[in-house]
Amino acid sequence: MEKCNLCPRICNKDRAVSVGFCGQTNEIRVARAAPHYWEEPCLSGKNGSGTVFFCGCTLGCVYCQNAAISRGNTAEHGITVTEEHLAEIFLKLQAQGVNNINLVTPTMFAPQIKKAVSIARKAGLTLPIVYNTSGYERVESLGEIADMIDVYLPDFKYLSPELSEKYSRAADYPENAAKSLEYMVNKIGAAEFTDDGIMTRGVIVRHLLLPGQLAESIRVIDYLFEKYGNSICYSLMSQYTPLDSLDKERHPELSRKVTTYEYNKLIDHALSIGMKNAFIQQGGAAKESFIPTFNGEGV
Image (cartoon, rainbow, N blue to C red):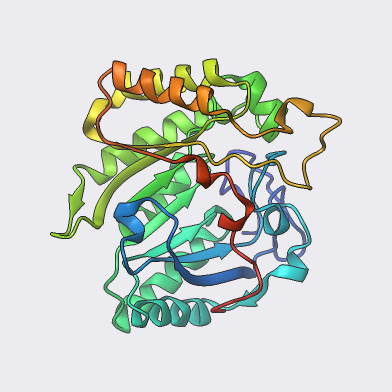
């Protein structure tokens, strides 16, 4: 990490002495590690997904539900761990009976995570590893860790560079998300499930509908379905929640939840183009109570 180029921003920062756009040094910082029951059903199941929330982020989404650890005071919420300690966290989650190890926003620490997974595997870790990402990835970096990943869970937020810049400070998001998703799909192959429906291998693409952006969301799912059809799984999300961290004067259009009409139109369109392998949400998903408390639990 002397010249960090893990993400598309290619900051070239020496993260031993400084931080990149992600706001992180080369020390792993974890804000929470515990069973999570609100992921897609094939990940959470009855036993939960073993989510490990890392601090920092390579994007700057103005509506981020995890803003406290992604762009906020990560020193307040995160705990520094070694690779050996991270491996112990994975094993502890496995002992709690979770279905998988779910790495949430792992990009900034991918090399260290790779070492931690290797340590844990040698010590008896058998669970699938889920790479839970914003989609803003470099294919070159994904290739370095690909052999340890069983399930990819990327976002595909926008096709519009203008919206990507406006809402996530990354005009090049669409091109990088497209390249990285293609790599993930080609690398992982066909989805695999246990007898009780838990995914052990596969790709699930998440898309969050934003207020007033139905047309953009339709463009996104049209693009994805034309390219991948039902060979991958989709998660069409209505859970957008305007938080106190949102600058409502600068982005007044984001100061409301998504309407039932907007979300139903998106689902109707997905069905009309033949989408079958998709998870959808009920209206109750748009609640702050679904956002975990980043209090160092399990770390």
